[in-house]
Amino acid sequence: MKTLAIIPARGGSKAIPQKNLVRIAGRPLIEHTLLRALAVPRISRVIVSTDSQKIADVAMGLGVEIVWRPAELCTDTASSESGLMHCLGQLKEEEGFEPELVVFLQPTSPLRSEQHIEEAISMLEREKADSLFSAGPLRGLVWKVNGKGPEPVSYDPRHRIRRQDAPDYIAENGSIYVFKPWVLWELECRLGGKTVAFRMDAMDSFEIDEPDDILIVEFLLNRRYPDLVSG
Image 1: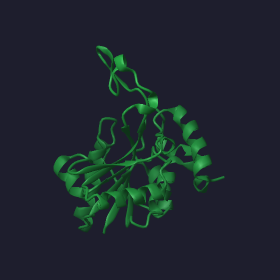
Image 2: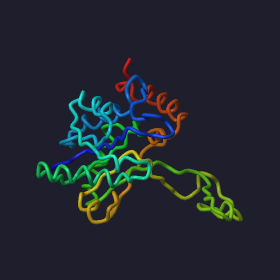
Image 3: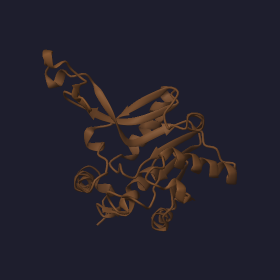
Image 4: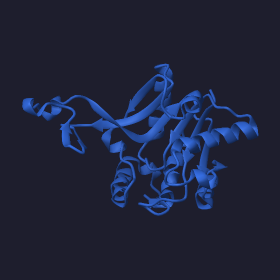
């Protein structure tokens, strides 16, 4: 099966300037994801979609291919789906290449392992699903906040329950998405058709969105995945 991994990585970022190049555990952030994708036997091709020469240099240094993304698809409001569709469109137009599965990996989730990715692909095939997202646990007594104030989601405050008895909730962790290309082309969305969730531990579900996240993720990388740590 032709399985393509796409790693979108634009050069700009507001909260953390040049976030994808920030050194974490001795490596540029994006390099952690690249190394994991390259280590997955089921992935036949790895591509970085970017507008940044510096990011491209890191990727090409590992033998990873580049698809250059136009500026209009690299703004803060541009969707990830637009970048994915552009990448697939370029490959089809220039090479006639059409994958059977797409694995979408975000550089901001460096705590996933190659085993996570491999197991996610296997789960989608085993469940005969069309799309998959990875998720971490959302534990405890959950509330949502709106204009009217907080409202309970996972329990009735009038009949308080123990924390360990709360319903089983999960939240997308942004780490792994797997989908059949038709889902993206027809729905313009990474998820559609029969969708399944691949569960990951809370400790592997941290994302880097804010500067303080770097300290947490770097600590966890050093403890959980020392093979990815570079002196």
